[in-house]
Length: 375
Image (cartoon, rainbow, N blue to C red; front, side):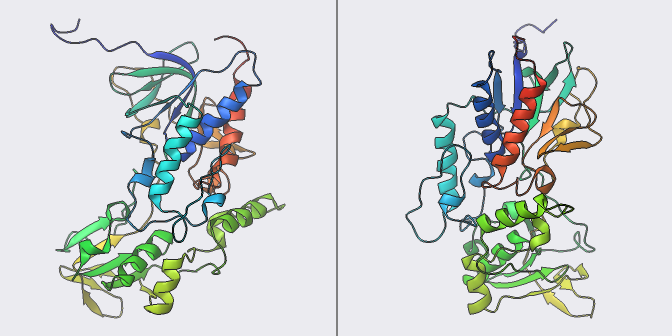
């Protein structure tokens, strides 16, 4: 029995579909569930659980100069184009946040926040318990759309514990002014590494950009829209298995081009190790640094899929995935679906322009697996 004064947790809420994650992937999935319901005699009940205190997901946390790869017209979620950006260049992250907020409202999507999902477990009646620590939802299908931002990848580089300066990850970096007068080492050969290094270089911060291999900049005329088109063509070609990553490493956004052409920004080899004062390269060269920014990528934020909710049944742990026409679900439990984690969920599925195709496939796949009768 609860101790005197304790408040009993509310009973789990029954829904047909629980979408975990309220960013672009979760919203696109919810939109397509809404559309799927128009074709059903008995609409599916669904909810979107988001761990933020407001709309916008990871777009709320990017560095100050972060902008889209493409114009607003080519950066839209399904159903409603992103409003035009009237300022200079492509839209900034704040414009995306405003768009995602308006998108939720436009379609009255059932987003509940803040909710931090801890795990999934069997709970009988062919349902899964989505456990959120004192709150729960019993769902017939669970769509994971948590993205990657909350799961940064930190590499294991010799000397990291010896380095006396600051070490940040991409998600911690904000603006060049925070590093005025510093010597900064940016590590990472992808888009984030290029953009952070360019941001610092254009502000005259002493920056060194280091990569494990020479980064390949895409042609200057390839933006996010063209990248998605190329990736989709390659996936659709018979025998093609390459996704976006095979087309190049870095989109040459305007700031990256300016830093390259006006400031001479070029990547150097990855250092062999960090030292107390900086870094040392394989040829014996050493350099002093005050800060290292690790732009080394992210992993799918799927800890809740393998977590064990306290006091509940067996944990649901997918041991593989089944792919079919851009829809991805667990091979161990077909009630568990995934959308928006990168090429393995469909071409460019981690982008605004690309997630719609994957979200539609998942929503329609979920709808097919749930009989069109009242639960």
